[in-house]
Image (cartoon, rainbow, N blue to C red; front, side, top):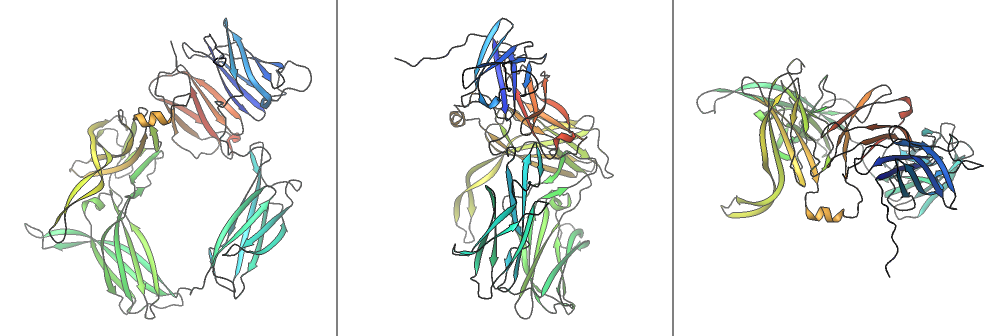
Length: 566
């Protein structure tokens, strides 16, 4: 015989969010996905008792908190954590929701701190010590209570335990110390002269919470000198240019070696390398946009060599600049090592980038999205004086990361084929700036890694580019099979700004993969702080959210969307 099955024939759907000390119930129509008002909701507990909770409002939502009304039964208000099921009656329909299963939507991730939980951190003032030196460390303990983070009370944590292990795992020292009124504890440990070299592990225990920090004990010599790098742009004649003399843009790299005790590193040997890297810019009024191009997956070494410092401890190295660097698409990282007369080495690295005349900004977006739910990008252009261009044209190129065989010829003239990762153009098109912003359509992207380059050309034909990268998941039978047990579709959402002050606003973007009846957006921290029900208005929703004082120190923004079956 087959096991029994519970079958509901109804047009009423229930969605719930439950947290410690509260429950949210959302009643909607299965046929339309729209909220249903005046639905009576009751809960069953583990003992089989029925507790009336109240009725849904015009938005189809009922929020129940013990002691704030509802419950119906005599005695103490029922605890939502003991509810095993919900039953709802309204609009001529009846619905039941099992809360004992595994499909419940939690208002916080499983690792989120519960009320009364204690967390701690531990750190040392540096990472390497010599035998005979003193290790200074500090631990910080915090308690989470009512959404606030504060020092724990003396009843919760009064003293902390410390345990130090050596490189071979043996216990070197155990001790306890009092926790200060600010929830911190500091201490020292003198490294013995004959201490074993290697990595030491310091552990702090505060009740059930713990934290660890590691540091090295090594014999090392303090550096006697340091390296300074300065940049200066120059223009030089280039007599080698075909067609006559031309002007060559050159970066002058001025390197200097100096002793900490004073004086130059005379006639020291210099080793230098120049790498091609990405760029990043800040533009006033361009908040919410990213300007520049990310670092390549592997730094490309452009040039390198050796030189000697002069009697003043200085050397100048000229390096030509091409259009890629001059237009701000790529930057340079210069690494200089100076070796003194005793063979000691000191190294310094510094980046150089040209701030382009026109800066292309790409609006913030999620790094990973689902296939079929890729949101359109937005872009803007800022001119030489920081003004935002109202009109113009942008060229968009979408490249997909793929692998293929590449034919190469070795130094010996031999032909070889190598399997390499390359970027293949998937599409490109021109889009217009309208009222200072352009929309870059990205529909139809399947699973993979994509690089989107947005280019603006000025009146003289010079190009300025910013680039971003998308990780698109799905779009294959294998992906669908791996997620076959999920009882829901994924909803892409992201925020324009993830760090705001109270009183400031951020915009929530929602992009569903199916027709939507209604959205339930919630601001949560150890429960639902605020919520709103929103009717859909198009393929992508933009909902402004203003941060309140109760958002401190952090919150999560979640969204649920109903999909009509009618």
